[in-house]
Figure 1 (cartoon, rainbow, N blue to C red):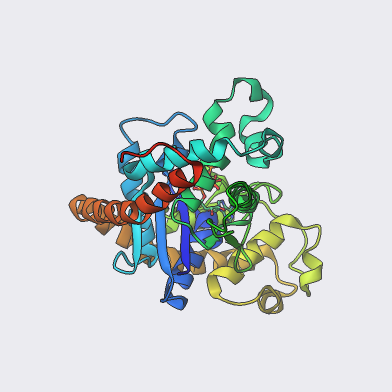
Figure 2 (cartoon, rainbow, N blue to C red):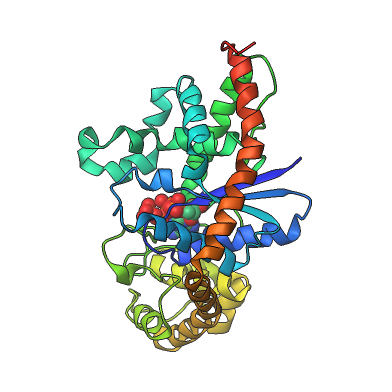
Length: 337
Ligand code: AQP
């Protein structure tokens, strides 16, 4: 059985990077791999690795689930659930995997370095151990494929490593070695304010990202003010080298329109950004507005979202329970006779 697992944190609103780098690919995979099982988690236990507003976390969790559904994830075809609803099992497996994860490997994780910054000594253990929880999320369902953006590739590689260590230690091919699935051109959408930085939910400036909930005027304003360089758009894709902001905007256009970068470059060759940006705004609004409208509608009836999340949690638990049981047997724990 091939099984896809992925998740997003309910930290702030989802942005265009989350959509193009991950969510859009989940929908494509769901539609192309009907014989696979699809599990999409709202990873709220990851979200609390940095403090969250307790009055907003549950709402943010529902909003992420609404975004999944609005983007095209079908709760009849896929399991959608909040991680904390199966949190006992995720946390338990995390502990077992933590006993076989080398600190040296965790020290190489770039996300921890980026997020902890200069204050690494003061960062919480949860932020440091985040990749082990992510490994547990994936392995608890014995997933075979993990569709993520480029920034999460290193964590999926660590998961592969931990799965191999487990299999080797207990001398059984128990865990699948999950494949990172990094699809499309927009695997790393960059900030609108700095083409060398990843578009991120937690970046201070809201102008650096397009949120899936932004209205048409806000999108147009953010794209109009997006950083560019003084040159016209190049004649070839190679001409984007050394021009990170131009490359980012062209990449976004290509991913949203379903064209290759070469086709987009050919269409706008030699044109000024003042001509290109309104077209990009128009395209972005056309693609995002229907999703935003559906998200709003879904959030009007939170009882329906809660029903989907509760049923997803039951289905997820039913898959995870026997897998965790086997893990405990392999470790050799005492079992009630
Ligand atoms: N800029 C991006 N380009 C492409 N893919 C991206 N992803 C995130 N940013 C980009 C992918 O979105 C999925 C969910 O990410 P997450 O919720 O786990 O958060 P993150 O990776 O930590 O991304 P953010 O948005 O930058 O959040 P903060 O600011 O809170 O750290 C993942 O598959 C990710 O690869």
